[in-house]
Image (tube, rainbow, N blue to C red; front, side, top):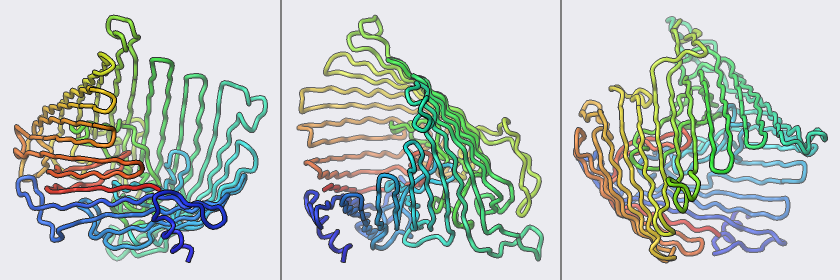
Length: 548
């Protein structure tokens, strides 16, 4: 009855006061797609004329108490989403109490310990990823500056839940709040530590020796320690995680222990900021079901340190974190040339430089399934996986005119996507111009050029190969409407495909409607280092969202 009441109250245009002063709020999202066959771009015939992903999140709050649910419908899932999502029903639900010191959630919840290297339960609707935990999440704050967490439950996998049980404890202490003499110190220090284990019943896994089976651990633990330190404009973050023996499908059932190290140092002042990040990952794929491949049922998350680009050709070859092993380094610098100088002009000039490099670990194979598998030097590296370098210059010429010019270099190894082929070397040139015609009308023009040494072959069938050119025109008017037309064309060494797209949108208060028509290139979409394959499509897309 409570669920029915929440849904009924949720289908209003704004939050309502109900049940003795409580409130109901939420959002509804409908995404649809109509696609037809196109042999040139690789778009296949879709039996259904309409594909639809839909969801409604309903939240009830009353003082310290809250409860919510999410209804999802995939009839059928849009292209690029796993077919296992097909169906509809209440996917997530929870009830929670959040007091001054104690918080308890029963049902589905999302949380993470530190940077997520041993536990991160989260959802990304655009990647089709939801590894929420259904169970109990307890948070206790005995005094100001100390937070303790405990979680137990099972992870969502499409419309079901994995058989593995996830259990975790985490503690964090802010020394400036706990130690009174440090309260006014400019140096801020936070320390944390966590432990996560998963239980999964034993199963028969053949070893590399005929007639023998592997001795599979039913309980696998992972622990981490972390520090966050800042002083003035300086900042330092560090986290180290280690995982016990965890033979699984990701590492071909070897007994090599896992570890990960993440470091981040930063400095900022007016007109200047810099950040350097480094990480090393060794066999840290951690799932609640050892036989589960793909993107679901990950207990942990390894942060991506590569820049999350937004321009089309810089995202052509996005990088996915290699949980089995990688080492990387990235640097980011932003500088503003002062106003009134020769280069700064009236408004100043912003310069942004970023560079990333990711490589395999330097390993030596010592055995196969059922053994330690390999050894790895700590600082040595193997083949390059990915590298990029971009420089962006943003110049405002007047209150109405602004230009952003970008150059980017991308090195990409197809092996990170499980493909064969030579290393790709791409040079990307971008010009992005904005003209604020008046308070209600804005015109944006974008041009991109990609020069690559990659060449399309039917054997590899990577439709991103070759040299590309792109143009985009976007017009926003009355702050409620927008229209955009873009076209990407592979003019050399590719499959010669053309990808025009037209989209229009309307926003009114908390409602937004967007329509699009055109061709979508096959490729990979990544958010935060987590990726999924997007197939080619040719047709209509629409999206409707409403919040209340």
